Structures are given as structure tokens and as C-alpha cells.
Image 1 (spheres, rainbow, N blue to C red):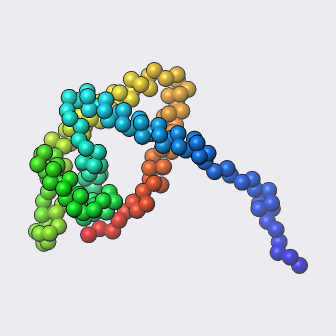
Image 2: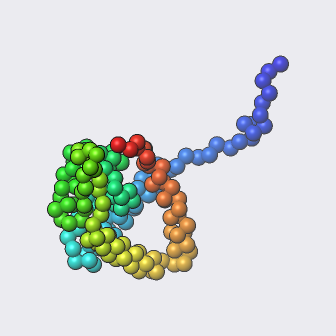
Image 3: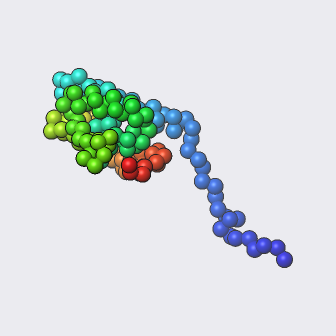
Length: 169
């Protein structure tokens, strides 16, 4: 007597994988949207945009106040000396506060300054205004499709993080 065959296996239809061209187009358009929003929001704020690496570090510190330099480097998948340089530059610019841990003077915890929080809030206001204006020029069905895609894009972001929670120091 042979092994029983599951009817699920016999009737299951293969799920097609993502289309390569569509996936490449998605990556390109998301990147271009990010660049255009960043440039336009920077122009509206009348400030020189920060380098992308500094922005990434500020966003990380906003999401994880008190993160150590070592943990920030792990989360950003960057060398600790690279992150230390970013920290130094952001401290000099008045956007980041670096505080040594009393128990271990080699460990520093990072926090945003009020100036950084204000700058980030200002940038977000400009970005939302730009997106709102652009979305208003789309037909209602397209606006609904973009809004419906947001949770799925958020999930993609999560899936692209190879190590979302590195071990603490």
C-alpha cells in the first residue's frame, strides 16, 4: 500500500512569485520618491539637507532613545568607527546628545536634542504637505490604491531588516 496522497497537494495551485520587472520598478520608484521628497522638503525648509547616513542615525535614535553607539552601529549595519564619526558630527551640529554611562565610561548613550526634534518635525510637516499636494492631483481610485498599499510597504520594510533586534550591549 502506498502513502496516502493529500487532496490539498493534488489540487493546490502554485502561487506565482513576484515579477522581476515589476519588483525592479517598485524598487526604483520607491527610491526616486524618497529622493524627491527629501530634496523638496529640504528646499521648503531652507536648510542644507543632512547626509543620508546622519539622517538614518537620527531616525534610529528617535526610535530608540538612549541607544548606545555600539548598538546603533549594529542596527545600521555600519562599522562602529563610522557611527562614532556620525555621532561626533551630529553632536557638533547640536542635533545629538552623547552621554557616557557612569558604570562604563566607554559606553555612550545617544539622545536627540530639542533642535533635532524640531528639525525632524519640520521636515515631516513639509514632507506630508508635499505628499498631500501630489496625492490630491491623483484620481480618487489611485489615492485609495496608494493608501491601501502603505501597510504592505511597511511590512516590506520590516521583512528587509535582516536583524531587527540585535542583542543589547
